[in-house]
Image (cartoon, rainbow, N blue to C red; front, side, top):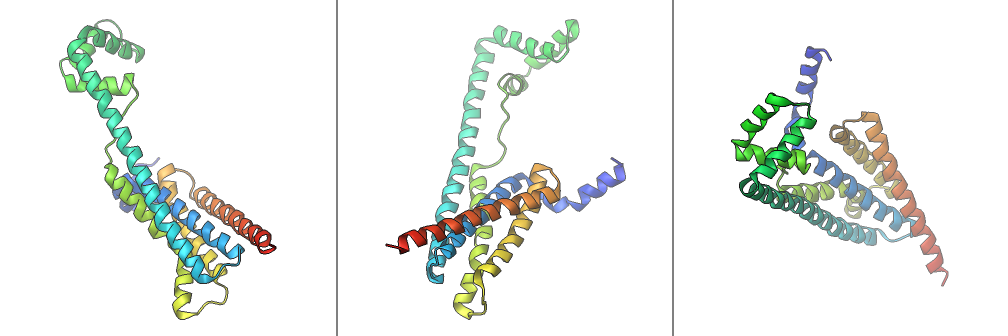
Length: 245
């Protein structure tokens, strides 16, 4: 890539790069929030439920599922962090109490990287004089583990806020109509607003997955549409079955 073009690319996406550390949590929380809430609305519409019921079901789902997802994200991140720290302590113990064994393992790691003879010994001698560096290399190259630098609390918080912030969009039209009574086809307008949300979150997703923007947008939009259609027809079918009794 041309250096000028690369510099321009970094400059253009500077605002995304600034927040990219937690962008993944925001994107996947937003996708789950929009898909889940829109599916609830679609299912309720398919079942012919009243607007008030749709709003109650939507908000109950929004906050319950958002909290559940954020707690899951927090616990998963914390477990990963705790697991890393546990193995790190074990490596420190082995370096201090079994230095020869650990040295042989270190030699084998760098031998596989192509180091041989005196150069291999020089590299190993240098690393073994620094316990922190030694343990860090053993964690990465022996155990294939890298340290989680993101805060589990922030991961859970970003996931929850994204879930609610994006997930409330399918309910917005119903809320506005409840007070102003301005819309003639609530589900159509809700579908349009939710589609815009899917396009936005699909666009952001491409910065996480580093894939084509069109692919990211249509993939997210398509999955949301499929979830809504399934929910709508399930609601419609169940309403017909239950209503026949």
